[in-house]
Figure: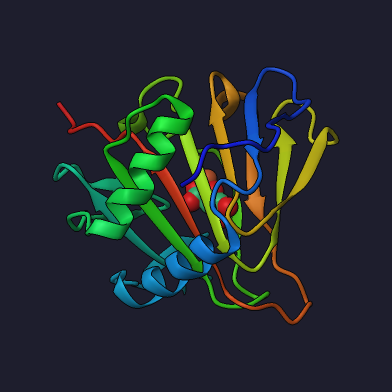
Amino acid sequence: MTLYKKSTLRLPLQNAEVWYYPEVFSEEESGFYFRTLQHKVLWQQDEIRIFGKTHPQPRLTALYGDNLAPYSYSGITMHPHPFFPELAAIKETISTLSGHPFTSCLLNLYRNGRDSNGWHADDEKELGINPVIASVSFGEERYFHFKYKKDKTLRYKLLLENGSLLVMKGATQHHWLHQIPKTTKDLEPRINLTFRNINIPT
Ligand SMILES: O=C(O)CCC(=O)C(=O)O
Ligand SMILES: [Fe+2]
């Protein structure tokens, strides 16, 4: 990565600290990482339980980590694979830029516009009290929606562009939900990487 020159944007969300960094990676770097991740990541499709019925998760996922800490959400427990060089290089770039270390990366592959990620907060106890979540996007642009927990009419959305970084920190996960909605638009695949600190349960 060359020196980061683009202006960062702080999103106007109350009781939250969310920053958007466009073009952290150039088009060329983003294309390289998209292709490498698409082929090298051990993608899986888990079954999730919603209202007692199981459904295949509407996207592919994978977990990579520096430690063996498992990560559980929506009734799924994921076990990490070790980092490979290109993924470790992205982690280093994002740690340096955001000023935070990360142990783990949860990846999402949205194959087309029908793949999605429903309303949730990244508030699992393995993440600690005020987690820093650093989310990188490669490939197709998708809308990212926020909804305030106490007043569901308070909403915000932004387009996550190829090569961008979104950082959520502070009290964000306590007060806001987020999602990647489905769309009927004919979309190309998108890869998202969310860097996190996942602690070994005590
Ligand atoms: O794909 C995205 O940008 C969001 C992913 C996400 O919210 C998550 O994995 O927790
Ligand atoms: Fe999330």
